[in-house]
Length: 148
Image (tube, rainbow, N blue to C red; front, side, top):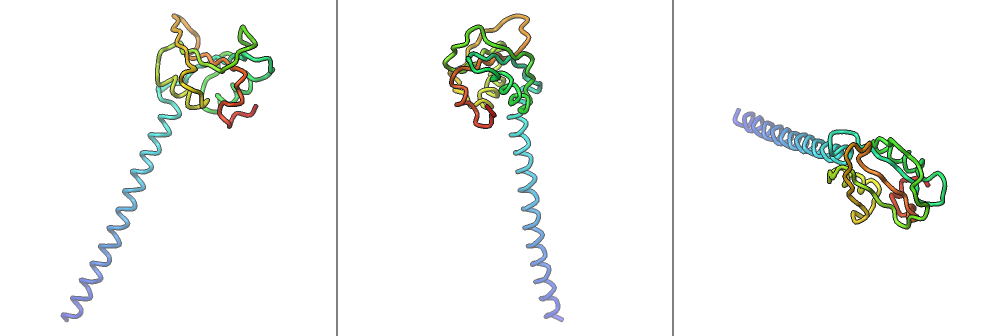
């Protein structure tokens, strides 16, 4: 009888150990999935709304505004306008920030893999877009996912 009780205690301890490991594994995965979801939400839409963008081609290479627009749309940006810039000899791509919202700018800089120094703030009343992206001759140095 004492042997049977000792066996039951050992079996109970092994079962509790296995259940504890299983519980730790489940809690770890839940925490990991919540963190990943928060990171994805921050990277996808930091402002809680769609970022509206104007894309202008500042180079002599035709079709760049369309290609960048397609890429931005795939990253959940709303491209409102795509056209040519007033000058066709822009050396470096830059962003014009019309809102002054650092989260919006950070999102665009991150998606394009652009240097934050290439952002100019020009707040305007009644602006149609949050940002204007002007493509420069350095366009191939932007995010390598863009199909130029």
